Image (cartoon, rainbow, N blue to C red; front, side):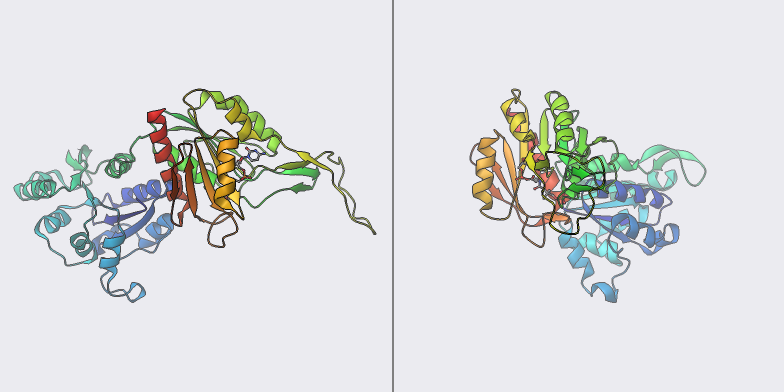
Length: 397
Ligand code: PMT
């Protein structure tokens, strides 16, 4: 489910495809856009490039991507969305024509295809379009919309492209992710807490919040009511997610403990400080000419352990284990010692993943002894996989 190719063809609704790409991106998918030449007359490729974070593929003969771009995109795609799908692309798809990058990619791919027709009502009602849609449906192409309403040509009728959120929901359904957590209250704790030393200094860690925010976004995308308890971060508040900002381990403990009883699933992705200064200086500590600075530290509360000790029946509790050695051994101890249903073990000494990276390489260790090694993947993909597992655990709880 990691890569969705969005094919944008030359309909006025091409501007709405920007929102589709944006929503898919927020949900954690890797989105690659192919535009037909006509589509580029309506919306600039730069817009899709900025929103998707990937180069936009425009032609079969782009030096930058090599000669076989249609093959690489067709293999990479876990789903191809054609939106808007004009009468022309539907006709090409139905007849196996391959005369540009999008139609060639569609022919070369065996990924599921979702098409969102958009055209004038007469074109939509034409027997040729009707026949093409019938052929495509028989071949398993999923069609979303069109709806009835005002059309770009000025009239009113059937042919208006489905709304972006409907198209995204249809895509999630095809990928088996649609509303798996519908209405479920979940809590995600994210980021690295800060323990103040004086008004300008703190003890912190390298957590960026990327893993936690990816989890919050993925849960939202699957229909959950998400509460995100976040330590300081530069990450933007995910759309539709309630966020509570905290600073210290103690503040995080207070917020998490108050809200945990109302949640069906809790994921602690936060890097909570294990120690905090016993005393916080009210004034900036001055640099001494000689000698160092000695801080006396005390343990912070182990939030996850407390949650495990007071876990209501049916609640799913998930922790992370950030280790630099003996990853699985330490993770197993934490799984048991903190009474968790699942622990996500990540080796934070790797250069290609862990803290601050967009990627993670993890093992999933379950209470029942099941252990799954996952490949290196974007944090957003890992987040979706974790929630799929949690949805399964909730069903069985
Ligand atoms: O934020 P990023 O830059 O994306 O990086 C992601 C991450 C590396 C921070 C994340 O993937 C991760 O591993 N988070 C857990 C970090 C951590 O504190 O691990 P730990 O092994 O020290 O703690 C085990 C579990 O207990 C964690 O779920 C932690 O949230 C929890 N804990 C720890 C200490 C404490 N006082 N209270 C806790 O609840």
